[in-house]
Image 1 (cartoon, rainbow, N blue to C red):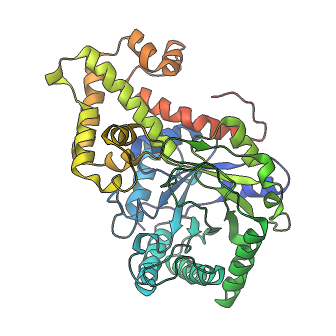
Image 2 (cartoon, helix red, strand yellow; image 1 turned 45 degrees about the horizontal axis):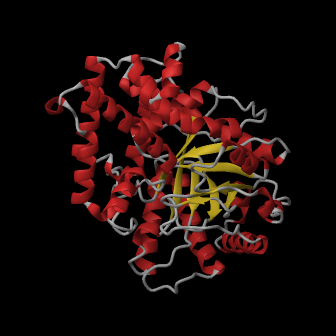
Image 3 (cartoon, rainbow, N blue to C red; image 1 turned 90 degrees about the vertical axis):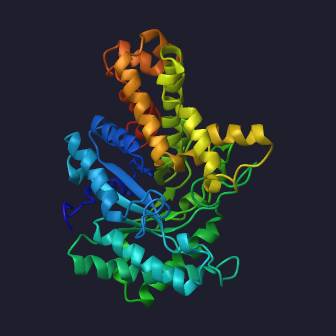
Length: 439
C-alpha cells in the first residue's frame, strides 16, 4: 500500500467513548471529493487542533473511478497530499467510505451487484480506510421494491466478512463500521419535501437486531463492538429549494434506542444547511456523527460565483474566465447529472442548475473545461488584484477577516474561507464546550 501508513482511529474512538460517557461531543464527516473542500476541511481541523474525518461516497470513488475518476487509493493519496502540504499529520486524518454496497449497480441483478460491492469494500479497506458504512438497503434489478431487514443485514454481513478478511490479509487496521441508512436517498432528496418523519424507534431496533444476528451467522459476532454508529433518519433533509430543520421533540423515543449499546452512537446524514442550534441539538440527542457534503460545494460555488462577478467588474470580456457561462454550457451539453432531478420551465431549471441546495453542479467541477475556467478565474484575479471594496460587496465576511489580518489576500484563500464558513458551525456543534463562536 504505497504511501499509506496504518491509519489510527484513536480520535474517532475517543469521541464515541466520551459521548457515551455523557459528554455532548461529536464529529462532523466531510463527504466531498473536491480538493478545495478537502483543503478547507484540513485547515479547519488544524485550527481546531483536532482530527478530520473525510469520507468518499460510493458514487464519487469506486474500483472503476466513480464520477470523480478516482479509485480508493487515489482518493487517499489526494487527501494525504493536501494534508502533507499543510503540515497536518496523516494520523490526524480518518478516512471513511460512505454507502458502500450495491448502490452503484442497482440496475444489475443482486448477484452481480453484490459481487461488485465485495470488490468495492476490499478496495477501500486495502487502501487504509478505517470507517466503513455497510449499506445494502437499495434494491437491485431482480429485488422487490423494498428489502426486508433480514436481507439487508445478510448482505451487509457478507460485505463485513470481506472487509475483515481484507484487513487481515493486507495487514491494515481493522475498520470500524456503520450500519443502517437514511431515507430519502444519499445526497439530498430527489423530490420536493414538505416534512419528514424520523425513523420509528421500533424500526431502528429491528435494524440493530437483524444486523447483530447476521454478523453472528457469518462468524463475526466479535466484531459487534466495532460497530460504532447506526444511521437513522432524525427528520432532517433538504431538497432543491427547501431545508427541513431538526425538531428535538420529534425524536423523543428514537434518541434512546442506543442507551443500552455501549459502543454505538447515531450518525445523521443530509445535515447540510441545518442551522447552528439544530446541529448542536443533534449532537446532544446522540447523533454524534454529522455528515455534510453538498452544503460544502454549495459554499464553494457561492464564493466562485462571487469572484466571477468581481471579474466582470475588473476585466474586459475577452480576458475573463467566463466561469458561470462555461458551467452552464457544460451542464447543458452533459445533462445526465441534473436532467432527472430538476423540473419546471427553462427559468426554473436554469435557477436550479446554478443555485439549488441539492447542488447537482458539484458533479461538473471535475469537467476539464470547468476546471480550466475555475483556475483561470483565480489566476486572473490574483494577477490584477481584488480591490477591498469589491470583496466587501461580494464576500463581506471574508472582507472582515481580511481587514483584521486573519485571511490572505488571494482568490483561493477567499474561496477556502467561504467553505470554512459552512464548516465552522459543525466544528462548534461538535465541541463539548460549544462556545457559540467561530474560529
